Image (cartoon, rainbow, N blue to C red; front, side, top):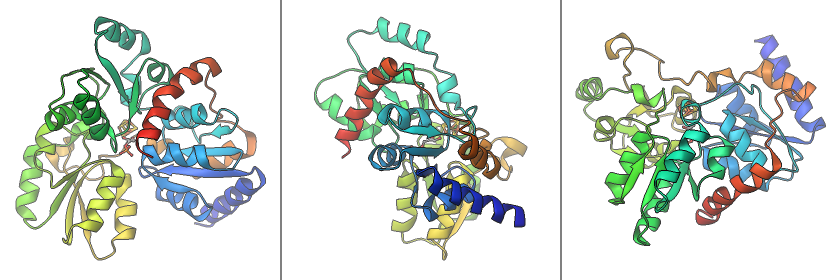
Amino acid sequence: PDERIALKARIRRLLRERNAVMVSHFYVHPDLQDLAEETGGIVSDSLEMARFGRDHAATTLVVSGVRFMGETSKILSPEKRVLMPDLDANCSLDLGCPVDEFSAFCDEHPDRTVVVYANTSAAVKARADWLVTSSCALDVVNALHAAGQKILWGPDRHLGDYIRRQTGADMVSWNGACIVHDEFKALELELLMKEHPKAKVLVHPESPSDVIALAHAVGSTSAILNAAQRFDATEFIVATDTGMLHKLRTLNPGKTFIEAPTAGNGGTCKSCAHCPWMAMNGLVELANALETGAGEIHVDPALGVRARVPIDRMLAFTA
Ligand code: 13P
Ligand code: SF4
């Protein structure tokens, strides 16, 4: 614990010295979530991370999360230095959507508006008409559908299916998945719900459709947080990364949050739903990034200009 306290003090000092602000995602270690808030930054979903970094006056942004979040920040603020604790922190959705193959898929459907999820590389974003995160995907696709547009969606198939069911839009989808949310199991969830009949079930839409079908609320990480505060219930079952439990518990001290079951150990796996890439963010790596400038994100400037178009569209749509 002494070492952690010393590391946190060092990070606070470095943030001041480097004119840096820290933005953390809800899935990173509680230490990094708390540090971001204590030092004038935020903990948020991926949409608000992007907006906050763009609007903040600091000359260095420290992004605790995964690579696409750092890249989005850099694209929106090319003049700022963007640091990440570990540049290898990736995402199965990003890794499963190589730009050449995705571009070929888009070329096969020239009549469709290309809507891509934030969890993608800068190059895939540059190929898109619209960017969305899970907190605005439904509204964006609803608006495009109402305007008579057909959609090409990528890369998360579960989120895409959910949006298609909700909006009735004509959509073709890339076949990607989040390795964390893809593991939630409906059968085991139903059994858990029988044990906790009053519990409300909160589900991130990167989960399979039969899990989503059991939810009382479906939405992004911030929507899950809002639902936990809004519902007049004392017990919740949560189908998203276990990193989320820190904020859910600290903001709702009188309520109980139970992890939804995943495949491991026949559905009894505890703390299995945790993203290995989010887990690469640590205090040591963060201090090192600030001290040495390691972990700086670079995006090719010309690519960044193209990738910014769909991101700006999303930020204007959700302003
Ligand atoms: P949110 O946009 O709901 O925060 O989720 C993004 C995500 O999956 C991060 O891994
Ligand atoms: Fe990607 Fe899933 Fe990890 Fe989020 S939780 S970064 S979607 S692999």
